Image: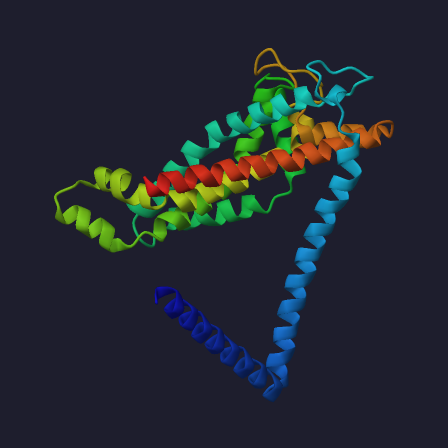
Length: 300
């Protein structure tokens, strides 16, 4: 009996959707402008998905056949052009950049949302500045990092210089996404916490911040993608040495810089395609792991 009821319910839903679709199509036919907009929206979706799949397919077709064991050797030589040191450097660079930028960005957004007074001119200046910094080209950040971290502070071409530059680059993104995530938390959560006798600090860290974690993590995921895919800024600050650095004061190239260097040399184009495949898989794995952690934290 339950199976029969489920079948009947499914048929009812199908009929309703069928009627709704036919009604929409009739309305589109009645109004040419609506039909034109509907057509443009579907065309844009189809074109976007097609371009995405074309790029992924092009990279896989040209890169997967060139993946060999020599590309994952621990040491880089001019013969094997191993990408393994670049993979390690990418993970180190990403971790250091997030270590610098995430706490600063989250605490700044907490101040802007929870502690700053409404209509504060300073808050408006900070927001406008953060939005402006998001639009600055990465080469400008690279020049600043070269002049300040590499030259003025005397850190030289090092992983630390690159990580500090990348932290400045992703800081506005983390700030803005964290601020919007905190704003999305209903005021009733705060009022309920205050009504139970909790203080401001306890309310922020026990009620507001956990509720905003999914939005904050989405900004962190976007920041990771920007760090992993950055080339120009890191060439000026971290250098292009194809070795695993002994410490953060040594130079090292990331996967994106490694791929750029191979393609510019013109001698290892096939290996550059293989590096692009690994870079694509690395970004996919990082995003998957970050999304999994976000879901676990939200459920917890």
